[in-house]
Length: 279
Image 1: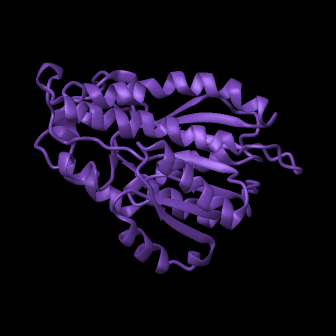
Image 2: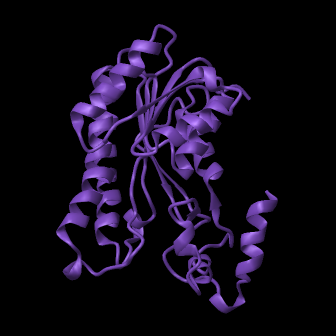
């Protein structure tokens, strides 16, 4: 099935992380040119890219997404190599593992999460939209935010994280109406992953009872892989698959409802984790 993504330029923030790396590989499979951002792990990202057959179509660059000047420089570097950026995925984010109620949260932790997850997404969107212009082939610009089910259901002990992700909904609703004034075919969407097996989440998933309780709220009793999130983003970004989809929230969380559908005691944690390696 054709996606229309071939030879478009895609900028991905947070490409050195689990979902970010899956995004890079998924778009590379579509023969896209890639501008891959890393925060503090640029050397690691470059090593991983160098080992791939598509390394020649990728450019890696570091930037602090909470700094609008550095974000603008990131986009400028990408444009200098590939021309305009056609697709943008605002994926960079942090999730402090330790749970802490709001009244005990360190203000520095709150500011850091908001600066990276929310303001980083705003600065990324701002820099992307500043260079958006209609393409002659009518393939509209596409911007996708990576949110979280924490922004939909909340997450006790991580209120600053849930707030940063919930705020992306307001940003989405606003920008879907702004982008069409720059490109009449431009689209903005949001993907909300649930619990996904990534480097960031893996330590938390080792806590006794966590996997069972997470899956008790999902009809599909399985954890997501980073590839599951990446494929959803590719769909939303593809001009031939989702050309009339904008302002939408696509939740990739096994049908999560925020309530228990199964008895946690009936869930075999080891079997769930084993299946992740089988697919």
